[in-house]
Amino acid sequence: MTELDELQRRMHATYGERDRRRGIPATVAWLAEEVGELARAARKGTRDDQLHELGDTLAWLASLANQLGLSLDDAFARYANGCPRCGSTPCTCRE
Ligand SMILES: [Zn+2]
Image 1: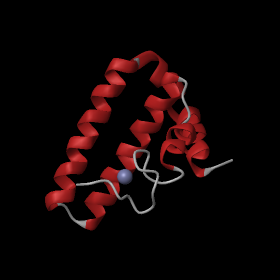
Image 2: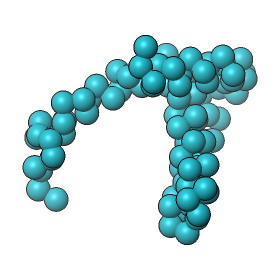
Image 3: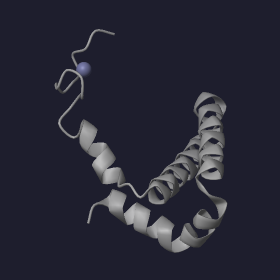
Image 4: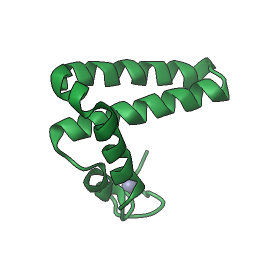
């Protein structure tokens, strides 16, 4: 089992029932809010703030993947062999 699988299993065990009740639109709203908090922390937060918001964002992303019935591992596969556009590591696409 990968660590991404482990994350999804942990989130399912901890919040699966609540996630089902909340539904996908509310989960997307919470994820967006957490990304906003992460953006703020990245700009002017402490390292602790940044770590906290990275954790919350990752948790909400895993909850959304669970509710969609999708695997973050499968999602990561898009980048597993380098840049999905040029196929290189590091990316050689024009910026
Ligand atoms: Zn590229």
